[in-house]
Amino acid sequence: MTLVQVAAAAALLATVTPLARLVTDADFARVFPRHRRIIGVCLLAWAGVVGAIAVFWPATLVPSALVGVVMSIVLVWLARPHFGVRRGRPPGSLSLTRSLRDLARREALLDLGERHGPVFKTRQPSGPVVCIMGLERGQRLVREHRSAIGPSPLAFTDEIMGGFLRYMDDDTHDVYGPLFRRAMSRSVTDAAAPVTRAATIRSLQRVTATASSPDTGLHQIAYESVLHAMFGIEAASDTGIGFAGAYDVFARDAISHPRHRRQLVALDELRALIREHAKLLDDPTITVAPCALRELRALDAAMPDETCIDNLLFMLRIGSSNVTSLLRWILEHLGSDPSWRARLATESDARGLGTDLHDAFVLETLRLAQSEYVYRRLVDDVEFEGFRLPSGWLVRICVWESHRDPEIFDHPTSLTDRFLGPRPPQTEYCPFGFDRHACNSVGLALMIARTVLEEYCADPDVIVRPSGAVVRDLRHWSHWRPGPTLAVSRHTATESRREPVGQIAVEPPLQRRDVVTKDVHETGP
Ligand code: HEM
Image 1 (spheres, rainbow, N blue to C red):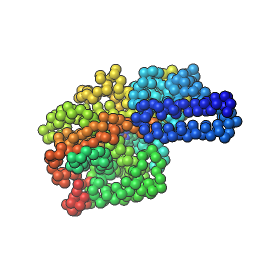
Image 2 (cartoon, rainbow, N blue to C red):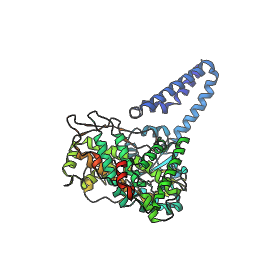
Image 3 (cartoon, helix red, strand yellow):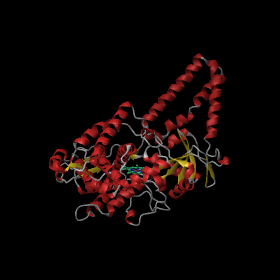
Image 4 (cartoon, helix red, strand yellow):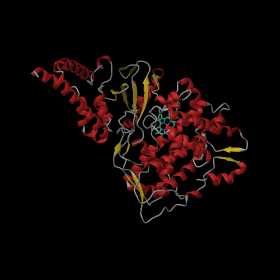
């Protein structure tokens, strides 16, 4: 090989430098060890390919290197933080590998905000993203440019006639948005509360001396609560058991994955089951427990239609998963600071139920851990705070980062009882979103979180061992969650001191008035 060919081989190897930086990044290696190994193997394979070219086709080395070098220069040019600034684009790098590296650091966007200012750009695989720091700023952008800002839907919305509420076009949302908001009434949450409590106590009774993940129990609590709130179905009833069979298949993969054929069949089964179940609303001999399905009918005799049924099913899927994540964080925080647990336990009211302090703990957990972002997509060019933001870009309103603003929250990284005081305005604190697409199930989510917190604090024999770590998936829309070592166990010398859960009154949701007793025995918790 000539010297020029050796230099060309070296240049070809150097084209993958951004990936090499990814695998040598300590944070990336810690948070994504499996992906790091895969990328490492790819890099070795690339080295093998360059070696093979050098041995078998040395004459092609120089032209290949020229192509590689030109491409690398273009990518480096595009990745400059000042790229496009003269055309009014915000500062910030559009390098994809850089943004993948940033996924491994929870504070990465906060640091970028410090460096570039509150409006900056970055990249995701689907294209450029403008990040907005500060909730007031983000809400102003949406308010002032309403017609230029659309939803950024996940693909599953196409499986729903009329779309999922969160991603509906405005005309469709004008019909269903307010309807669902009213349907998720206080009475729906109140009727679900005993279900949540019973499910929590049952899951605490299953905690043994051997430390184990609380995930299954937390998921079950969230599922049973939201199932009841959506349809008035009790998980242990015949309908509930039939529902669970199809639901397990339907909900198997992450919501961002396309549903495969078996899951679509399961979704059809669930639709049929709920259609059948909704007929009970017309049967005067049956009392359906307060639930969204019942409220929708009460609000509009033509409801629930197919769009409502699909939305309720997907709300169950997404809502129970959101709540499970919040519950995980509540346990992580509870285990991390025993003084908080002791204080919550002593401040319970005369009936052993929680106080404002419990609510304050939940709201603080939402602020610190379970509010990440609000995404939108620009459907037209927008001028905002001196920047020209082009149509097609994603908008990421950085909620988690904005909740750490020291100008708004004293000691922003500490878990305090700040929410015992007056609640901050939505422009400073909004874990449940804002504007027309704000969460319609805030009361339900808070009720579940508070109930679980109360029950954990009321059972001093349950030990919560925090993971002390945070993990996430290698996807830009993934949420940070506590590490997999978060565990619960029970002091060995103790049994659960709670009454057996079968004695807890859970309002039977769907009962023929004449067979109440039988149903209670057959479907009881
Ligand atoms: C910890 C719990 C939860 C959190 C932090 C949360 C957060 C949010 C946020 C931030 C939004 C606004 C999204 C946007 O503007 O793009 C939202 C919307 C929504 N959430 Fe929640 N949520 C939670 C629980 C639930 C539950 C339990 C349900 C239902 C059972 C639910 C149903 C919805 C729906 C349907 C929307 C869209 C509303 C509309 O567009 O009209 N969420 N949620």
